[in-house]
Length: 511
Image (cartoon, rainbow, N blue to C red; front, side, top):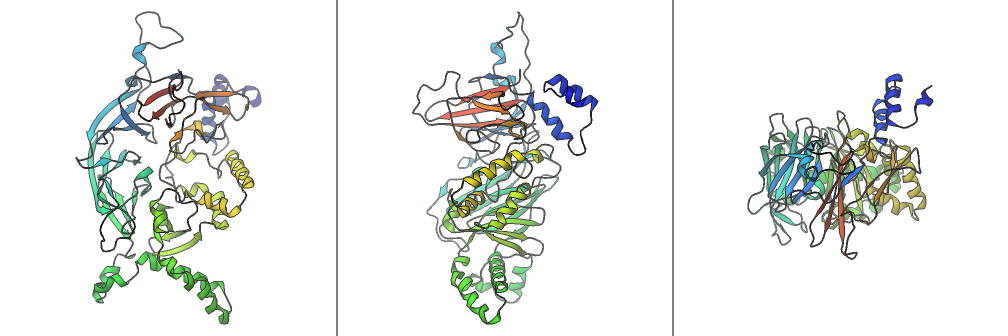
């Protein structure tokens, strides 16, 4: 009986939902199958819209965040569904001109100035606090590579005169609080230097090698609750002061570095059970590389839960460069309460890769109360994604290089994936070189991007084509595209940017 009605069209799915209950724990996945029939079916090319830099939809779908081209103003929209009326008989195959406007889909709530005259909004940085509908934004002055020496600063890391984080209530645009860092360097690109977990915010100072843990209070205040770097315990500095040792503090290694060296020493010590050979083993494995360990710096940090941090250590050069695949790196799990390093892995560790393959979703640390984010496809929860990963692994010529490449994005950037059901690999197949759930710009193609049904491999459910309908007149021009999918509506924006040309914004929606 159940198989008779599951023919795949929308009517039969609705009838099926009324007659049959999904098995326990499968309700959301069953409902998401409706998206095989509810797909973007119509495109408005080069829609008339303001000249803004559109950032993303919030994960609850309530807001669309944009920035002005001069990187001074924040503009927030609320998505609305297309509505229009015609005085005359409407063309069933086309929309009236008044409907082909940006404000037919989005209502501007407000525009506020975030940056001062010498500061600019970082257009790649945005974190959303869903429980309070707060937005976290960043502004900064220009980066200086010729910064002078400063006590506690890492040589080789550039400096930014001022970096300010702004907490904004997205409902009305009220700026609730600000947190400023001066003469510091925080990697703001793609929100790499910050990680949000529930009401806790982690900000990594690369220049001073300090992890700042802030709590976002219900009142909208940013309160620093912990600082990890030179000291690990809250009373470490007081203890050294009381023993008169802070005056020579420059001779001490930072507290987090001491924890790292202690863990490596104990691990090396326990590797050799023979007492007579243990000293030689320590000389070879620990003391010979001692200076290399001392020179390691913190690159990235993320929350695993409210008590544990996942920290990436590496060289100074790798910390400020964009390509880190070939750099030596270590991953540490740090307990903030006990101030101990729980485990440590090299970036070529097959043990870490095994954990990555099996427990991938834990590396993203999504809050449990999220309605959409917990259903992002991965090789830990989707057999199609797992098959793709294992195919890539089997084709790799070197296991070690493959592991390093897979480990290079860790720790993952916060809120870097779209929860849209159209990226669900159990529903649709698509070319991940051209489009994916990851929040990244892509090289543009002349051909539409096809979304193919998984259950019906020969059926193209819909297509997304960035740029103008007629295509580009200059085939040599470098074109970059980005895609903003609404988390649950059949609605998406494709944005094509071409050097020295106007930005082309297309709206893809179900008509």
